[in-house]
Amino acid sequence: MTVDVRPIRVLIADDHPIMRDGIVAAIESARNMTVVGQAADGAEAIVRYRELRPDVALVDLQMPGVDGLQAISTLRGEFPDARIIVITSYPGDARVKRAIAVGANAYLLKTATRDEILMAIQSVMNGRRVVATDVAGQIASHAWSEMLSDRELSVLRLVATGHTNKRIADILCVSEDAVKARLKNVMAKLGALDRTHAVTLARNRGFFDD
View 1: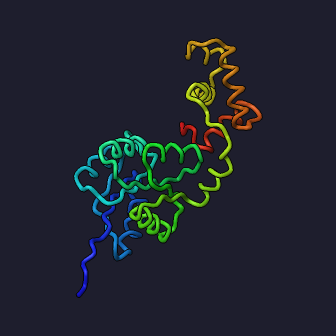
View 2: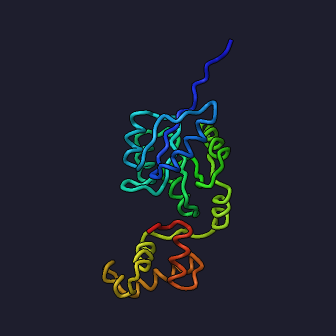
View 3: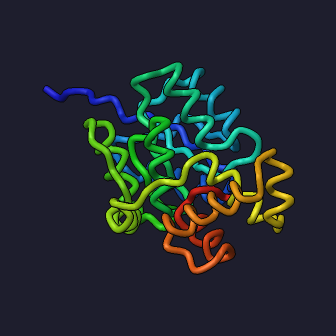
């Protein structure tokens, strides 16, 4: 007697149609998986998830309007048992930690092979977490590094847009000495040589994407 095994139902959220097509082809090539829906942004992903209740959702981080992190946070708030895999072009230990903090079960890069995608889907179905090898290496290399505080990030974001310390102080309603102190802490935590280097390192690690 044969036993009917229901295929794993997958929702894909990515704003690039070609990327979605590639993931669909990879998933549909597996006998025990099927794509039940697609979304082009975070808002649509939330709506489609509510309608379809997939077993697994693959969600890009960088999408217009409601981004991937916001979508994941909303879905996990409504569906605590949701299984969500981030699939993105962006590595960075801070970015991964944010994704996991809001509820992602796995973190893949868009360079992942077909087998890596299928294995990740199966793994999260079995209750395991998955992090891309390259990204896991970044996390390990910064395991003992201090995270930047919200106040430090507020200064660094303004540095990234070209503001002077005096202008940053005016915008944040703090003293110029406070701005300098926060920047000093930022550079120490990141191991940066100067403020421009600090912005580059912060972007690479995923502290901010703008």
